[in-house]
Length: 189
Image (tube, rainbow, N blue to C red):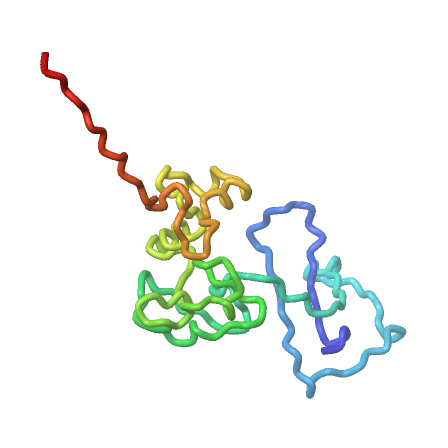
């Protein structure tokens, strides 16, 4: 898409919050795009009060990493706790989609479409999915009833298992040796 194919309408209203804020997206329709000579443009008085309207041109923004449910390339259908399989097109993802539960790129989620787990249906507005995410993100810190907002990134890492078999070092079952039996001798007097 060429920069001249995109129109962004901005307001010069100084208020950050306005009830009537609007965004107009002009779709790329090749048949209706005509080059405009800037010398032919003139500013005229608009009786309807839109004389402060500014039209600027720009390029499309870069797609940043986002949770799958926020993807603009593929529609997402929220469900409360469905893990039986992908709902509608929830299994589709772009190269920047992240798994909400695993907190890693969707293409690396090993249970993205696995029946019984199905992370592709996860989203933040579901208590079920939020609890699943908390268990993964907090790890062993969950037993202390921490809220994700109460801990920083370093403390979050402290709750994750360090071993590949996902067992915390303090929870290992150690092999204990029995004490050698102590023989006591009693003397008869």
